[in-house]
Amino acid sequence: MGPTVSCHKRAVAREGQAGVTLIELMAALVILVVGILGLLSLTITSIQANLQNDLRNTAVRMTSQVAEALLAQAIDNVVSGSLAPYDGTNAALLPSYQVYPNPVQTVRGVSQTYAGTWNVTTTSADLKQVTIVHLAPTFARRPSP
Image 1 (cartoon, one colour):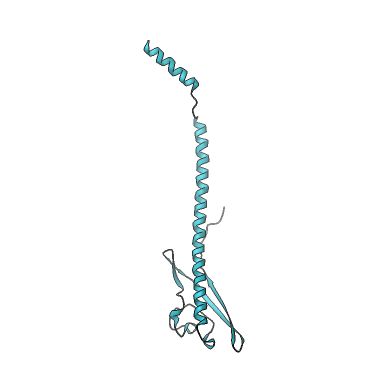
Image 2: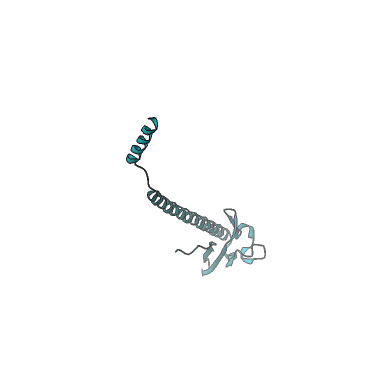
């Protein structure tokens, strides 16, 4: 008598059981995977944006350092030039090339070479206009789909 009662109880439990079907489970997994892939894409984009900002901030800092070095010189010594080569042979970096920033900077543990140039235009006998350009290196981005 014991076995018939337990079989009857199992049959009753199956009729009232409310479970998840395999199709519902697969649909939930697809939705979860799509959400995780979206978050992964967002994370990669934010990492790239942060790196570009670090490169840009370094270029801005270098531009400021060049401007300070040029302002510290006598007006007659200010001439057009660039940071390369970064040694005592570059006439634009004299009298002391070491006050200028080195064009090779380390950003997030990786050496990056920046192109830094400035153009001096004489506007009057005692006034010169200096245009400083620093180009931050960029990393190649994958094209958007």
